[in-house]
Image (cartoon, rainbow, N blue to C red; front, top):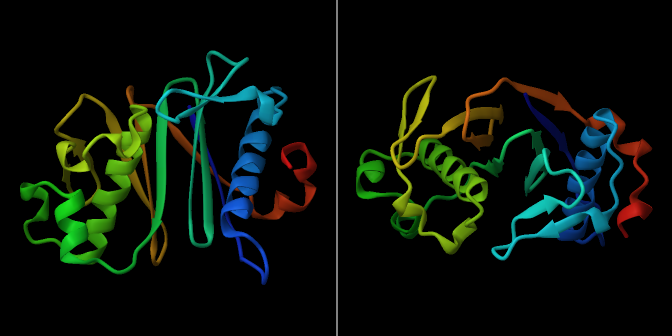
Length: 195
């Protein structure tokens, strides 16, 4: 099973956006791992050569964190996983040319562009390449309720989090996905563990 923990947040005056998102992402990871009876400290998180984080002492657990304005998500799984969350926003011709293949760019609209974007970023995070790999080299077909990766034999899922926010997950083997809101649990997190 893949567990996806998510929360919304508000950036208060004088808060650093990156630091807040980083702290919330770690709190989501900590919460999910505690449910699996795994204790976490920031020293337990290492990075691959391409910057993908992994757990040093939990070889059979994988995680991935993503954030955008107002949202933070964390996926925890027993297989490699990539996750991305994005707010639907401005879409320029330059963005389309930088992210989408020629086939994908045909008849594109703003919502479909961001659905492709989240799928591509979750795939690139899953394979550990991030944007070291050209996102146009990863192609998807999107149907109303289904997604198919044309580049690799992987399973991808796409979900609308709210009116203007999309989430995508990539994994090798299809698995059940459990979504859990973390909003009411933020107060109990000991952020000093990660300062």
